[in-house]
Image 1 (tube, rainbow, N blue to C red):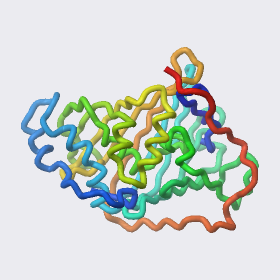
Image 2: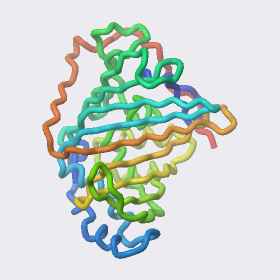
Image 3: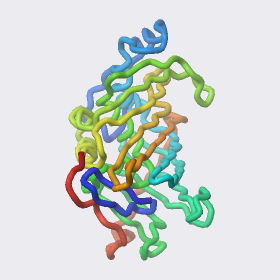
Length: 292
């Protein structure tokens, strides 16, 4: 998978209330009252909708952990590529582990390629089965603060906490009504979030990545659909990003994160230093100036 930054360069991607990220966050009491008020109104603009969406990261911090399903679809020049992942995330340590499945060269999901193991940690992304000359028993470590998208899409899956923190910049939110999601009644909200606003409101440990993400996209405005349960927890979020990659219509990436099984044990062990590959990796950081 190749993503582009708004400054015009290509990045050869690595094949592809709470969490610990929210250390120092004040629990803001989520959105039960505001969400309940939304239920009394028809779909459309609703009092408390923006506050409910913005507080969803705090609700995840209180939930402590969740099972995760991810899906990322890239469309550029008529070519569509889908990447899927499964795993778990511990919001108390801001870390998680995913098994990411890439399509084969013909576009068939999961065929002909070994899945990549990804470990998400504060400020870092670790990948195993990275390919491109990396030994099979070694991990690749990427400093997410150096990525121009803040690792919102680079790894082929959005860090669940980053996806929720990004909603802190939500605006023009409309309430779409109640729906069923995996047997759970959720409230569906739709709107746009601003990356810069979200970065300024984010927890200290996720703020650097979101500030980095300001540089990575054609626009700071990210359309989203968010689904919250009665506890204000984010059950599903779909976010749509755009890149200026030289194609007439640019490139778009739709990232979907689904969260279930809150409160379960999620064990994440960071790779030992001796297991991290120190050689040259066949990838390039985005270059160029921010586009318009």
